[in-house]
Image (cartoon, rainbow, N blue to C red):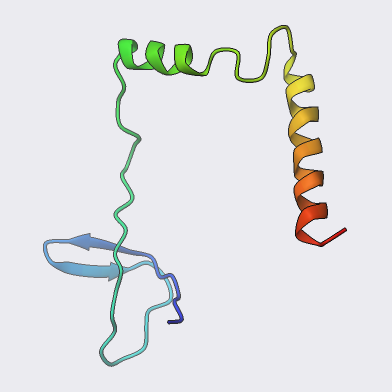
Length: 84
């Protein structure tokens, strides 16, 4: 199954296309609704999320240290993906 993405606004049962439109005829659609803003989280939920991830990158690391680790992981994934 080949798919192509189109952007539209759905209102009152009608689509208002915001750019390119699918051609005429009958089309099977998979619809994803994009929310205007992310869901609001209570301070308690945010605190629980931070507590759950505390120490995930180790202690005493700077953002530069973490970025360097991520870059190294990406390089390893790229090598694995290309069989090197």
